[in-house]
Length: 434
Image 1 (tube, rainbow, N blue to C red):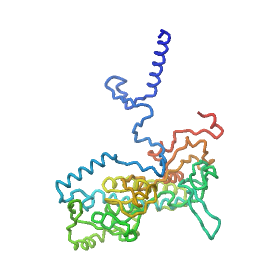
Image 2 (cartoon, rainbow, N blue to C red):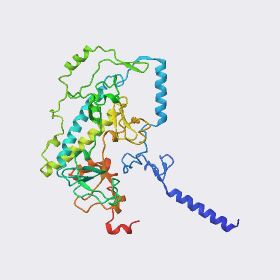
Image 3 (cartoon, rainbow, N blue to C red):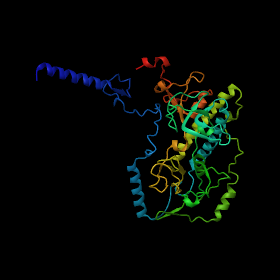
Image 4 (cartoon, one colour):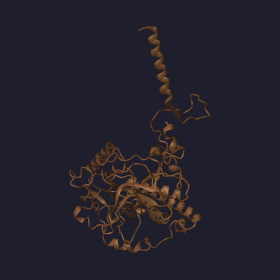
């Protein structure tokens, strides 16, 4: 190899090293050190996550109906926990369960949280219903003109907040190819803004945690958030739940309750004064009860609605740390309780191999409260969102977008997701932007 070729290879290698170094950036720098040896510097390769809580990227769509949802807890940890429980059962087959709520008792610090979540949900529903007449919600829906048929079904799950629907071609419904994936916008409803999936209500979550297929009509189905609040301590007359005063026993994996049955009536009499009824309004957010006709009240109404949203989400996260919530890995079915039900109602991928049974796994907050992410509209009175500029647009939950368009300030948690720091070009400048 000649000297010139060796020099060219060294030059290329040095240039490549400089290029790689430029794609690395430094974080957590203490500026008081001024670059000395004692400063804390962490070099992160370009493209990796920084785990910054203030940055939230756009939600990724589900890969496919045949792909299972990701596990919140790694499978290795789940297998390790199962082995530990099995070894503990062998060492002590008959034992008293000590920790609530597995032993049938309530978690004391979560009783008040469950009541706050209950009233935050009620305030949220009232606030959304008052904002919808002024800020409409559109869904991709087909409405037949034949009054005899009255067919009204959805093309796809896309939702848009605003008076005019966007022009982003993302429809995947029936005959979407004939429309070039354009959406067919119709006026939506409250359920399109926020989705509360339903589950079976359990009277005794410890002794009878599962609903079998033959008993599917004997148990009422209520919103999963409401069922979570009931199991955590909210008492409703319409949906009773058994409250214990003594922990239960675990005998070779079976739950046995030796508490006398006579205490049940005594507890009902003692807790009669603490039961919540639907007519109570003393804990509804005060700004939600304002008249929405005036613009000032509408702004306060949107702020109160968004406050109720964040109170409900934060409270549900706290309760889910102690109370188990399950979801199917292939369909949106959820169940609140120690175990998932045995009702054969799954129609998702691979349900034939499971005989219609659900593939239960640990649920997340998005499985319990469907946020319905929508495109963020900066100027509601401007032109509709363009398909060629969708890379510059941000997203937000439909509740947040509805409240922001009604006058509420943009929350810091969703500023990065809404891409407020990105300046989208005009429609005639699309070809000029790299």
